Image (cartoon, rainbow, N blue to C red; front, side, top):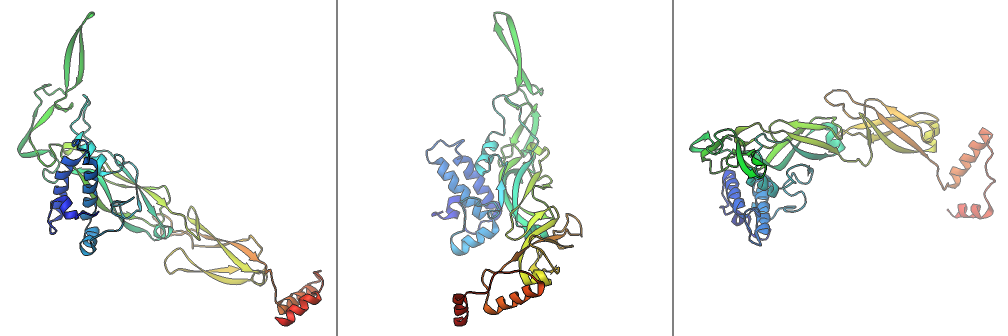
Length: 376
């Protein structure tokens, strides 16, 4: 990103968001490797895409205007929500593939053009704390979006749909080939209208009659509390836009919950480990830990005579249940720590306890140990 991003897009520094968007599309059509065979076309298109990645995002643009740079731009995950969005099925995952789909949108190879928009998938990574409280996450992704200039119709000024003259509106053309067996007929998709039966007179210059254009979409994804790893959220009509006003696909958000350093989730319950000393285990105690919710303090009651490996259940301190006001439980796995070294006084107290309990222990300290105790 050594070049000035505004110069890369060919716009002024006070250009509006719409002007930046149109400038990007205009340049991308000439620089995309599918149409530009110059040896440096791919590198220039990449540079253009990186510039648009920054200037199409209000926060990144503001930071660039202020500091002249933007962390992470052009790197892995740049332009896709700060690294917490995994692109999974976005025509290969980049604006270049979106444009490839756009350039091929008028059909080819005799195949009927698909008009309905496809569903699109992303993976959204969240922390366990975000899942516990619910969160709204900003994301950005590339898609074919409805053309704003023609509102998805594909028609320009005085434009209209007319019956295809090549197939007379049937969407298919019949060819006859003479063979030694006689005349053979074959029907194929009409190459002029791609099987639609209609063509466009005076198409929209922005979308070239498709009714949709490559764009970078910015959305806020509202994630409800308690959602589980692998669950999906569906955002209606925010997938690939349909061609010429056809139905748009949906955006499917696949939730990915990152592992936590302290808690382990099991459905709506949480598991965690705590270490206590042998006195706490024998006499009982109360310990406190930070809960999964912000500023939550959980009091864990250690019962008298707690054993190593014992599991203590703390009700209603697990994960919030999905679309519910209830919570799961917290299970504390207790480890009892035995001291490896004892002071003189600690040893004497334990020896008295052993005597009181009638428990056989090792013999008294050696003269060397007693000497060491004296110095300590």
